[in-house]
Image 1 (cartoon, rainbow, N blue to C red):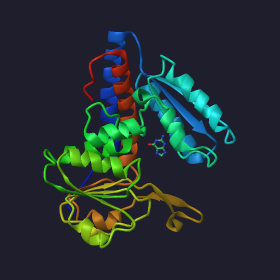
Image 2 (tube, helix red, strand yellow):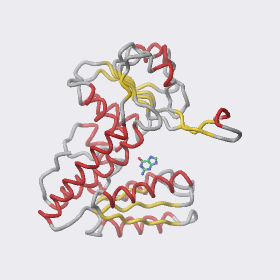
Image 3 (tube, rainbow, N blue to C red):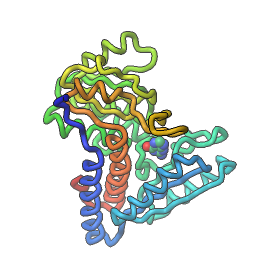
Image 4 (cartoon, rainbow, N blue to C red):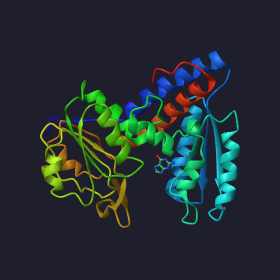
Amino acid sequence: MSDARVIDGKAFAEALRRRVADEVHRLRDYAHTVPGLAVVLVGEDPASQIYVRNKGRQTVEAGMQSFEHRLPADVTEGELLTLIHGLNHDAAVHGILVQLPLPDHIDSHAVIDAIDPQKDVDGFHVVNAGRLAVGAPDAMVPCTPLGCLMMIKDRHDDLSGLRALVLGRSNIVGKPMAALLLAEHCTVTLAHSRTRDLAGECRRADILVAAVGRPAMVKGDWVKPGATVIDVGINRVDAPERGPGKTRLAGDVDFAAAVEVAGAITPVPGGVGPMTIACLLRNTLVAACQQLGADPPDV
Ligand code: GUN
């Protein structure tokens, strides 16, 4: 058996959601307003439908208002932009999230650009990406890397000088994760599919964040003994051992091998996943406080 601590993302997320709910109460007393989150879903993608349903339920459980907008897969970009302009001007809406991916005929950059940066609770707008890149304190930070950072900071009192390897260069996870770790004074390597000697790069890392979407790509012997391993991957794989046609979720890290080497590691499921929605609720609360002129919440 290993000594690695398996990080309980569900418990982490539950604690964050409780803190958010407390602050929502406080804001309601202060401003007589509850934060509102609008989620826009285009099309019928089953995984996106589940995410959106969970977001709506958890928003209401945290004491906030949830607005759901479901549009057909053949909606035009113009119709979607019109909806977003309306949400930008709706005082009851403090946060706007357009579920990605969007159908191919819609330019997702144009859609994200149309969201008021103050209401961009995903942190995907170029204004928020730029603010994060230059270290501005009022950047809206993308939810998944924010959740990862919270779990990393729980393990390390001081990240200063630690070597961090981020595997994956997406705008949603890899790039903002690297910026967050750099702001914490880590020595950051942003690795990707063209990186040479990926195993060697990983082996040097005190903190390893895997976000590539390839099941079990990171092997046990790629992990430095004692490292903190954060697995962002959510990959559906065949699981014939569970019966014919059955599937299961697998991360980007070979968990069974890595848990023997790591100091701490997130499982899949039950690691990073639950933190993403909890951070979305946190960002919606922060956005509402900014828009209502209230003090920033303690979350
Ligand atoms: N699709 C997968 N992850 C995300 C996310 O964090 N935000 C949005 N808007 N869409 C997603």
